[in-house]
Image 1: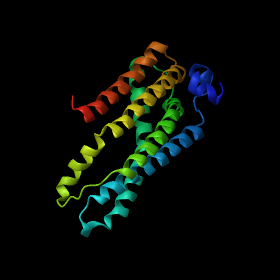
Image 2: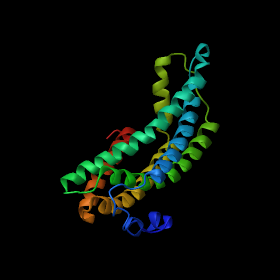
Image 3: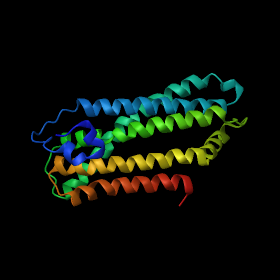
Length: 213
C-alpha cells in the first residue's frame, strides 16, 4: 500500500496490496465521507438561506428550519451517494467476474471520494461568494419560488460550480478504477467499464439538468 499522496496522483500504488484480507479497515473512508457530508451540509445551508429570503414575510421564520433541513439532507445524502456509487461499481464489476467483497468496494469508493472534499470546498466558497452579492427578488406567490431558484442555479457562475464538480468527479473516477481493479481482482479494462458507466451517466444527467438536452 502506498502513501496518501499516491492516492491522489498514483492510485495504483496506493491500493497495491490493500485487499490481501477480505475485511478492509473502513474508518478512514468513513471519515472522508463525514468531511464531505459536513462541507455539503454547509453549502446546502447557504442555498437554503437564500431560498428562505424568497418566501413571503409571514413565512420568514421558516428560514432556520429550511437551513437545518438542507444541512441534514445534504449530510445524509453524502452517505447515500457513497453507498450508491459502491453498489453500482460492485454490481457492474460482478458482471465482469469481480471477486472481492462489498466491503472492499466500499473502501475503494470512500477513498476515491477525497477529490470531492476539494471540489466541495471550492463549490461552497464559490456559492457563498455568489449568494452573498446576489439581489434576491421579492416573490409573493410561493409557487414561483422553485422557478426563481431554478433560474438562479442556471446562472453562469453557479454552472461553473457544476463544471468544477464534474472535473473532480473524473479525478475520483481515476482513483476508483485502480482501486476497484485491486478490490475486485479484475483487469483495468473491466474496472474502467464498471466505474465509467455510472460516472458518465451521472455527468450526462447533471448536464441535462442545466442545458436541457
